[in-house]
Amino acid sequence: MISSWRRLRAGRRAAKDQGRGENGDLELTIPTHFRCPISLDLMKDPVTLSTGITYDRESIETWIEAGNQTCPISNQALKSLEPIPNHSIRKMIQAWCVDNQSYGIERIPTPRIPVSSVVVSEILSKITMASKRGEQEVCLQLVAKIKALWKESERNKRCIMANNTGSLLSAAFETFAKASFNRNEAVLDEILSVLALLFPLDGEAISCLGSAASLHCMVQFLKGGDLSGRRNAVLALKAILSSDESKVNALSEIEGSLEALVKLIKEPICPSSTNASLMAIYYMVNSLVPKETIIERFVEMGLVSLLLEMLVDAERGICEKALGVLDGICRSEKGREKPYNHALAIPVLVKKILRVSDLATEFSVSIIWELCKNEKREEAGGILVLEALQVGAFQKLLLLLQVGCAERTKEKATELLKLLNLHRDRLECIDSMDFKDLKRPF
Image (cartoon, rainbow, N blue to C red; front, top):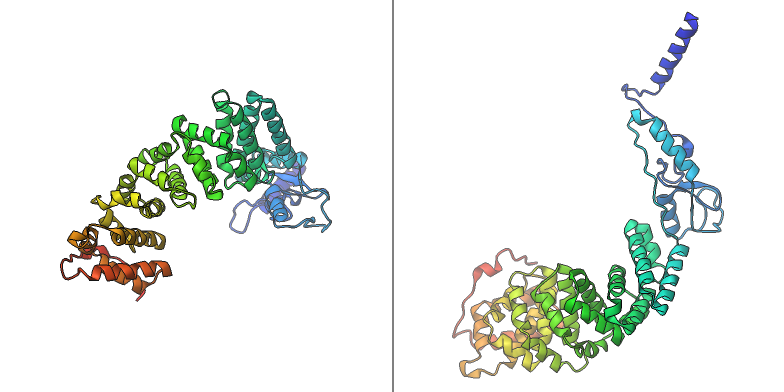
């Protein structure tokens, strides 16, 4: 009896010693059937292919997304690209993790099953039917379900994007918009919040969002919606105008649309809404359709002063967009009236040359060129020309030509240099600090 007990204790001790490495640390061998055949790591979300072989979901989905349609182990063609969760193996792995907690193994959480294309298609089909029947409550719940699935995982996002979700939701938005904004405001707001996640949208979706009814609804959100509603609306408007220039006039004719866009700049919600509002205005002032009236309205709202004040300390993205809008405005005679009399105009524009980016430099030179070339106050030899000399425009333009720039910008810079050179002997004051830390390639 005693010898048997001793042998049993010795066997246990030997087994325990086998689990120790050379340094005396405990080592644990993961069972082979718990390892993913691709990554060789412990499977966290085991799934089985049509060939019967189990892999970790992340590994096999990466394999399939790379364009492979065969099983990595058997090399057999896959009958379905949708892997099936292997709950039996997953529960065995979880039980093994619990049994080996003393080795520092943590139990893997039960994974959420990602949405399939079939499920997404079914939800979208129900949304389409509900919108046609005017069932806003049903549609609201279904759209909220799409949003919840989107937030769960990257895999869900890819699946939702791949099932024409943007077009179908845009069509539903248009349907509810045609019925009544006041009655369907809640579901319209929810649809718009999901569409904001799906940008960029395809042509079919843009066509639905660009309809007269849809545009009116988005302007309503811009004017009186909550912060998220205003943000989502301006993001949608930016997408519409960037894809379809013909919508510029349609949007400008909606009461309060231009004022709402300017308000987003004057009272910013977040950087993305400010950027989107600037881009929407940029498309409007630079479109090929008749835009003189649009520019006049923006000028009357004080947009020029707002942009110049914003440019003083704006970050790069907003700075480029603000300069782009100002460039479009200054191509109009009415648009140039405000910069002529604004104390910040020339100093700020000259300051931005070679300071922000190549795009900002191009816009700045273009604006200064428009202002100086078209200035009619010749009795003083051109007030803006003298002011540009005072703040060091001549030296900056010379440096710009040496550094290099786009051909059209080079032409404008050369013309400006000729114009400035006529008055250099009268007045010139250079802020030497303006060139500090400027990187030069020569």
